[in-house]
Image (tube, rainbow, N blue to C red; front, side, top):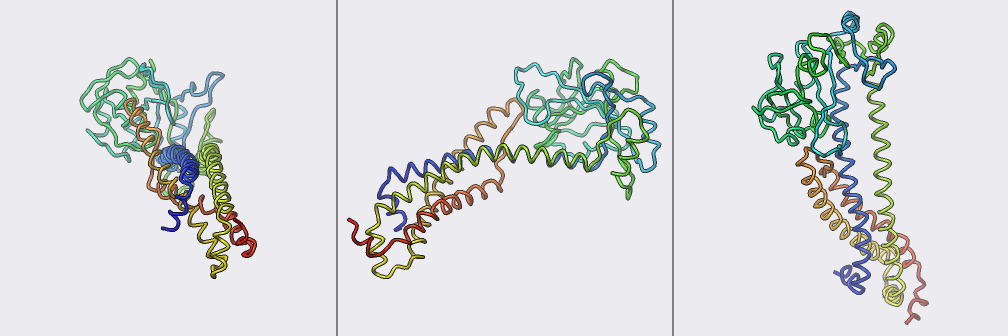
Length: 378
C-alpha cells in the first residue's frame, strides 16, 4: 500500500510514466505478435524441407521459376542410389482479382503434385472439412484455410483457379504457414493449366531418400549427376530459413527496443524527481534505522509497479489491436498476428524487468544520501 500511496502523490506524473511504459509494451506486443506469426509460419516450413531434397531446373536466360524438367531429368534422379521417390510438382501463381495484394509469407499459389508417386507431404496436414485429394480427383482441389476464406468456399463448391473450374473436396486446418495460402491439385490438372496437357512438365521436384541414407550426400550426388538443376538440401534450406528469421527478428525487435528505451527513460526521470522531492523523508527513515537496502527495495518496488501497470495496459490494448487487425484481414484469408502464450508471459515479465532496471540507478542514489544532509532539506 505504501508503494501505491507514494505513486499517488504525483498522480499526473505517475500516469505519464505509466503511459511511457505502455507505449513501449504496446509496440512490443504488436511487433512481437507479428514475429510469432512469422516464426510459426517458418517452423512448419522447416518441417517440409527437413523431409525432402528440393530440386529445381536452372532458368535458361529467363525469369527465375520459368525453367522446367524433362522426363530425362526425373528418370535420372529416380535411378540414383538412395532415392526412394521423386515427386514432380508444378507451382503456379494464383491469379486472384480481389483487390487485396498484401500477404505475409508465400503469395497465393496452386501446387500441382503427382499423387501416384507414393509420397505426398500434404498427407501430414490435417483436413478440417472434407477429405484429402486423391489421384481420382482429376478436377478436385484441397484449399488451405486462408485461401478458402478468400474464396468463401465450402466443401462441394466449384471455384475458378486461373480460369479452370475445380471442385473443393477438402479444406485444411490452419497451419500458420505456407499451405494456408495454397490450393492443391493433381499434376495432370496443373499441366493443363500450364497449356501442357499430356506432357511430363514439372517446375520442381521433391526427392525423398531411403532410410539410413545421408540426405546431404544424396544432394551432392544429385547436383553432380543431374545436369542443369539447382539442389537445396535440408541443411541448406535450414540455413536459409535461420538467416531469414535472424534478419526479421533483428529488424522487428530493434524497432520495439527503441520504444522500450523511451519507456525506460520515462521511469528513470520520474524516479529521480520522486527522490528529489522526498529527500527529507528518506533522511527521516534513515534516522530511525532504515538500511540502504530498505530504501533501495522501496524505490525498486515503485519502479517495478510502474512497469507492471504499463505492461498490463500495453499488453491488453496491444492484444485488442492485434485481434482487430486479424479480424479485418481474416475476410481476405490472412492473419498477420499471433499472440502466443509465450509472448504474453514474456511481455509481462519484461515490463516488470524494465521498471526494475530503470529504477536501479535512482534507488542507488536514494540509498547513498547522507542522513544528516537529507534531514536539513526542507
